[in-house]
Image 1 (tube, rainbow, N blue to C red):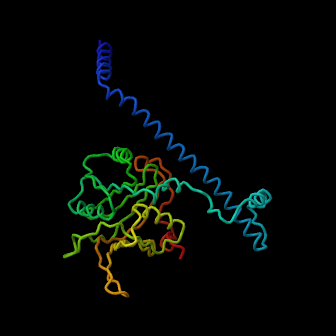
Image 2 (cartoon, helix red, strand yellow):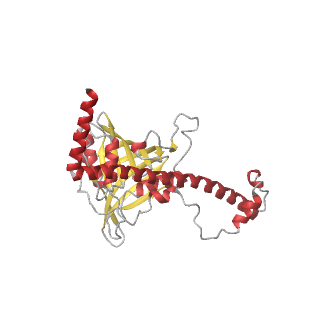
Length: 323
């Protein structure tokens, strides 16, 4: 009897869906969208795997080229393939910019289209975190703020992808103090995790000026290593291209792997002097992980870089700069 009842319920559901055209279109579109997203993700992972193979060959070619130019012995790791690499070197020209990477796919529309940033919080935010998120939203021109409510991460990411959001920024807290920032680039990543220190909000400063909403000029100081360039790109592409006459300046200054965020506006007092005024907020950031996927695939995404704080040389090493 129970099987008969189940069959009747299914038949009734099918009849309702056939009577409602919108439900029928939904049943067709959802599997198609999932298949398309899976295919795009698979193509992206394939290009990333090919990139690793090409980079290995490129590094061997550079070792051979430098040894031949300096009249030194060929390194042992490339001696077996030296003849083949020498033939490949003949086809290289001076204008090449190296190996194209998955980073080129991640930010291929940077500078062409303005980024669309969504800012939200962790669940059950305190009043102080809500104030800080409002200020973070004003930092990024054209950004939107969303109340987290009871939404799960998967639903957030899917909604952002459906609305062509390029970056999802999530702010975390501990006991009312903002202490974490996650920047997730959509649709395929990367996702950068930062720890926040010494947060001073605009609400804490009396008689502060109103915040300009002009597109800001960006200053990145001491991001000289390969990881530093990666981090500067993740932060840089959160902002649109500014106009030349913009009076708003945002600074990311790296010192011993702590990134100081400062926000200023300036005005010319005369033809030689410029007067700076801090708008706020201000804080320090420290990177502790970069993953190659988005937040919905956090458990299975590859880790591009992670800070290992308990190794012997962790305090001595500088990761974001060569110095």
